[in-house]
Length: 474
Image (cartoon, rainbow, N blue to C red; front, side, top):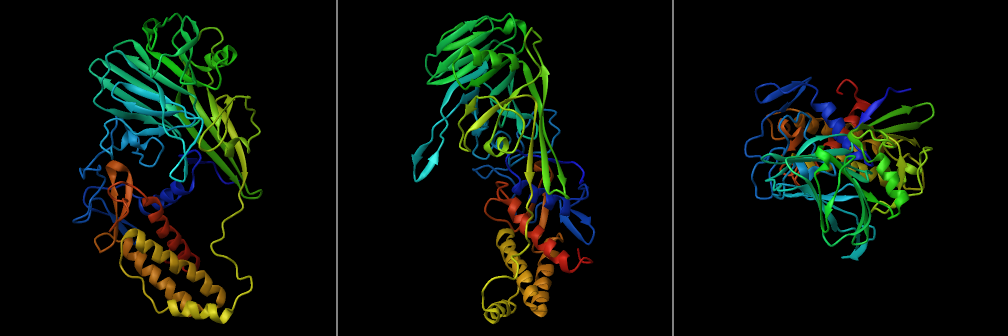
């Protein structure tokens, strides 16, 4: 049994694994003062090469992570909530965050919440555009920006501050709730149209806005007032949760009320791979804190599982569902669920089978063996190395060892230059963004932290191929 590992995403793997692998290969030492860090025979820089640029916004201004005071986690730039931390388009708040089933957007007065259950067909594509139904905030709040306070493996907490007024909102993939903490004013929930309030008893509101159903859950003893804008002093407390309901029944509202006060504080995903059975067992867990211990409230949240999760779990789900761009999501009660998947392996190259002209294929290989790998930007050069990497395996199966070794030599030369700071090609670690970028760059990998994960994965794949034939070099 291989020991338990930690992943950092839900519903994704390849991009993060390749990025993680590249960081393991290259950033195995903590950057020190100066501009170069030596790692074995290689090195990387900790300052940008001359004339190059780092993360910027769309106006070409250098940007730094948009985080709260005291934020101490590595900056993330490739999650569903990344526009909250990376102000590329100049927004001081965020773009739309597609958390599923909820879609949300940070604005100066709070958090817009919406649910799009049906696609629209436009420009030859199926789209789920953002339509918000409500905005949750604090009376008098007009924050100049929204920042990242903390995050889990698939959850994030945003922070608004405006003088004595502040608000945090915790949300995540699969969560039908957003959990709010507020100070300096009453909680306000503003609808885009007059809501149909079908339940209003003490601290709980059940309402429908533009055909979407929401539950508002304030602390025990609270009351709500207003119509299009609902307001509550929260009975002197500082928390409330708002849930997207799958239907407008009082039974469903009661189910959500029981779980509404188990505030999610973190999310973690852990996995084990059993090599003998080729099975990956992944456990997704929420950490929660029960803020209202009134009778009937339980310290467990609810989460909506994606199709690729509920098809591979024995954990029970309810009969409640949501629609998403990734298909139907099924609601589950509880803080954990586990998936079991078979891993079929990954071939480094296609085997030497099938009906083909061996001499013709060998001629193709020999014609390329006259080529060399030129210096180039990280993406173009990466693709060129990947081409030679595939040819290594083909030449090896053909018994063309001279050609195979030529390709290996060219890959080594190029990688050695990439893995050495100060030359025409190098990797540079940008500490403020927790990112390793190859220079010369391209396609936004440098100024948008975009696509760098698969740029680096070409180098990872090329290095792994060399290691198959030259372990001493590796």
